[in-house]
Amino acid sequence: MTQTPPYQVTDPATGEVSQTFPYATDAEVEAALSAATAAFAEWKRRPVAERAAIVKRVAELFTERAADLAALITKEMGKRPAQAVGEAEFCTAIFEYYADNGPALLADRPLPGHDSARVEYLPVGPVLGVMPWNYPYYQVARFAAPALIVGNPVIVKHAENCPTSALAIAQIMKDAGVPEGVYTNIFATHEQVADMIADPRLRGVSLTGSERAGTVVAAQAGRNLKKVVLELGGSDPYIILDTPDVEEAAETAWATRMENVGQACNSNKRMIVMNDVYDDFVAALVKRATAMTPRPSGDDSDEAYSPMVSRKAAENLLAQIQDAVSKGATLHVGGTLSDGGAYFAPAVLTGVTPEMRAYKEELFGPVAVVYKVDSDTEAVQLANVVDFGLGGAVWSADEERATRVAEQLEVGMANVNTPAGEGADLPFGGTKRSGFGRELGPLGIDEFVNKRLFYVQR
Image (tube, rainbow, N blue to C red):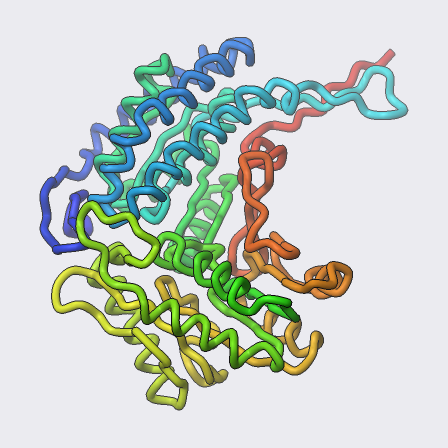
């Protein structure tokens, strides 16, 4: 049985469905696997410099078409126009990074003490990317760019609500000169994804999505002995030990939380604030949340908030908030859902305790949960209490103090005096139930390669 509805564009501002695309047939899935397998034989033999030149053209097209690409995802999942353009342009940086640095990253590495031994970095074959809706271009770029440079054909199964952006990426690949079969978009069902993972022609799978989806794909990959990379949820701590300017600290924290309407894996979902700063910090957040209004079409101001990706997602977030309030948490502002569409009023929530869902669950939307602590030790304990371990940030005028605290975070990405270290050259990934494996930077190209020892006895 296939899931319903099919791939479709649903405007989250109105709930209106404007385009629908059928699921792939089993014959189309077979054709994708066959084409990728056939293309691999030629693609892997091309000099890496030739692959890099094609990837470089992919990079250029993302910026050349940024405005059109942005309009697609604003309609598909509600992204703010400026952020949508920025996402497309960031893809240029990612493809450029691997085009420029890939050849050196894939160069043979000699082994000290052995004149005739080296490690080679070789392609493994077709790989599958199961992609999410929250960053429809960026997520694909960080999976596809290193794979293409390595010489692995790519098959992409995008989120069901992102069909037009998925097709736009496929068109970019074609126009840039990526050979047929080297990049394939397919509107697969979950069952078809499982079949592809089981197929011996597929050599690996990367998923960015929910913890639930990650456990399913990891189990399928494990049963079939396939390499898997998982980037799952997060409930990142954002620790403010001290600040000379509470308003500025609150402005940075709020802008970070409102990025993509709070729908980012490594968003600052838990703000942990020292007691002498706490009251003023909460008041500053409440002031900013109160000033925000739903974003009308064409508006791109900082004071307007976009709809969440869907009515269902907003309803799930509302249920988490209601659970917390019913058990004694304080909702200072927001937390209401529009009558139509998926506009969720940005909220500030305090007094969250362990018996509430919001204490350990990821709140994937515009909600700032703020905790008060009395010591650095208490801040670290609270930061590490959740099962997630994606990223975290620590703020202090005393950099050494912030560094000591950040070093104790059980995360894949620890940051000091910045919300996150982000860039095409900086690895991204987590630990614990936030997944495993890395994307971006020099580590991102290592995931789907055969690190072959080549040894000559002399």
